[in-house]
Length: 405
Image (cartoon, rainbow, N blue to C red):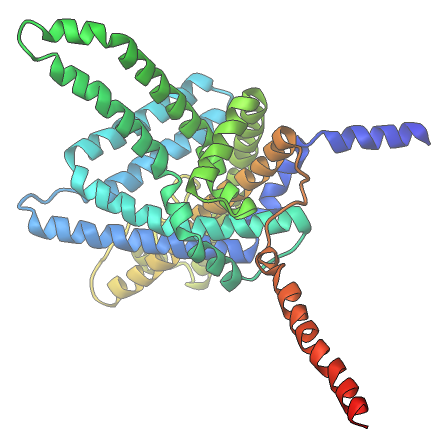
């Protein structure tokens, strides 16, 4: 009997298996709907911006958003495949190539990328905050808030969600400005080198602060949204919590993240395989239904493969063009649902990791979460004091009548 209790206590102290709940939480319909709407808005904004840029450009080049989408998808798939094959050099190579390609696009079209980044961050702040809130309530208390309730929560905390990822960047730029000014002073003839040498120690200290903020921002970025969703933190409190958890237990944070990444890669392959079976089954029965005349089907829909679910949009002309376009929209919806699952899994898994890290660092119970009822805890006390103020007047009224009698 005692051995069973001791064994259960040991399993209770081991928290990392709780990360495996992320898949079940990620496929919740409300999360997928929120993520799908976010993907649709971001893609629509990107395509509109591409149309504007291509229309105003004299050269018929590929749109910036299309380039970013292709680069991100290629890098993501290459990273997942390499990870499942335990090819760590391949993982590193795919991530490096992806960031290099994105950096080149950012250099060539920095104004476009800044505008698109702001739009994306605004949409993700609302959608990601809502998904984190649903995941937090589901993981902490087993509750499943409605879609509108979660969106209302993220909309009210939009400033915290939006500024939390930007604040570390602003801090780095602010600190780097002093080093930049020192470099400008180095241009002073004859004494510039001496000034830089005198203040070099301060510059190194500033560089160390930049390194600390940069490491904390990269490693703790995934915890910023869950901090707001769990504890109703503002921007600076979310940054402080994420930084403190990373630096307090870095190995545990890395261990939890590695488990979530591997688990997420396996779940993604399963979801993609499910979508592939869905499309191939549909395609096969349609092929049988057209009685062997494959030309009609192939004219509007290319045979799907595991590597290319949506294929290319081919417009043969006439009614077939309309049919091909409608089929392509359906295929885009399937791909959009897969991307929505990735987004939902990302925020759900990191919400669980935040709760586990908070439990280990701050010794906070997993069930402890902010609720809106805490904002109105003092209201009953104020409403109950009103009858007490009226009560003495009612008690003195009989005394006065008795005295008259």
